[in-house]
Image (cartoon, rainbow, N blue to C red; front, side, top):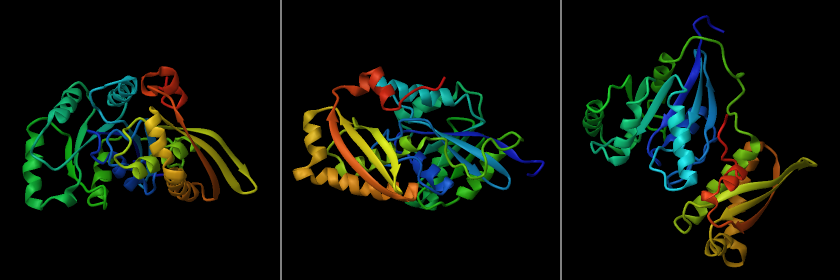
Length: 298
C-alpha cells in the first residue's frame, strides 16, 4: 500500500429521485442500492466500498432529506441528517436546473449547520445541452460555498472518474477500513429483501403507493439451491389484491424478476416463494419498522 494512501467516508445526499443510488451502483460496479422511479426508495443507510490504487472510499447512501410525514419518514430524515456530521465529505446530488425549489432550500439550510466539506454533484448531464449546464452551476454557486462542483451522469458514467479523484482529495491519509474484496456491509438477507421490494415497485408501477416492505422468513442453502421464503407487507386489503394479481399473475411476475437478480447476486440457483400480508399502518409502528430492518445504529 502506498505511503500516501487515503481512506475515509463520503455520504450521498439529495432530494428523493435525484439518482443517488444509481450513482453509487455505477461507482461500485454492481447493484447494491435499489433504484426506482418512485421517490424515497432507499430506506436504510447502505455502506458500500470503492477501493482504488490511491484510496478507499466508504460510501454511506442515505435516505433522501425531506419533510417527514410519519414514523418511517422521521427515521429516514434523522438518519440522513445525522450522517452529514459523521463523514469526511458530503456529496450533494442535484439536477442541472436553474430553479432551486423548496426541497433544495431545505437541504441548503441543513448544510449550513455542518462543518464537513460539501461537493456539489450535478447529475443527469446527459439530459441537457452543454450550454444549459453553466447557468445551473452558477445558480447553485451563489447559494452555498461548495468545496468543489462536479457535473456527472450516473446513468452512463460520464465524468465519474473525476468525481472519484475529487472525493479522495478530501479524505484523510490512512490504511483501508475494509479488505479489497468488500463491496458492502449490508447483510445478504437485507439485500435480498431490497431486491424483492425493488422488483415489486417496478412491476406494480403506479398502482401501489410507497407502503410496502419485505420480510425474509427463511433463507437456507440446501443441495446447492438457496431456498428463500419472503412476505411482501402492504397497508391495505385492496393493495394485497393488486400485488397478487389475477390468478396470482402479478406475484409470479415479481417473483421471477426478483429471482433472476438474486441468482446473479448470490451466484447460485434460487427457489423463491412469495406471500402477501396486510399490516395496516406499519410505517407508523416502531415495532414493525424494527421488524422490517429499519433500525438505528447505536
